[in-house]
Picture 1 (cartoon, helix red, strand yellow):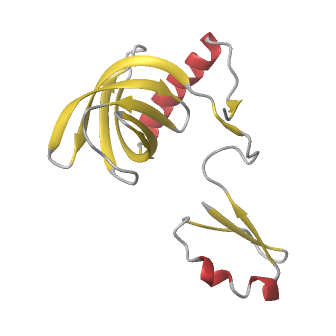
Picture 2 (tube, helix red, strand yellow):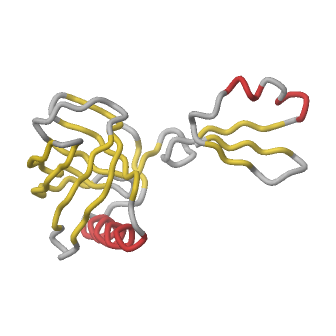
Length: 152
């Protein structure tokens, strides 16, 4: 996410794909540029990841298969699957969580390490977001963890 802030105006937010060359005149109009990536503004922290092992299904284009959710955070999950994906691919994950919540969410692949994929939640309904947050906050509490952890 790209945040532009002028001293005289309200901050403007743009997707990261916003062309940086558009900021050529930023000095002239006195803009402050801040780039955030979904992590806390403190660059040495990320959302805490809680290890789990939950059977799930994925849908990628016309392919369907089984995967295992390896960890949860407030903004995403890690899964293990045999499906070959690359960063930027959109994948749908369907699972029943141990707290009796059912999730059906769209995610973007952000990291690929062999069969392990780091996914960021992309399209999620308000009800699904509440169910996920309830589950993640419960995991954080049970594991005596805070919302953010140092990047290792």
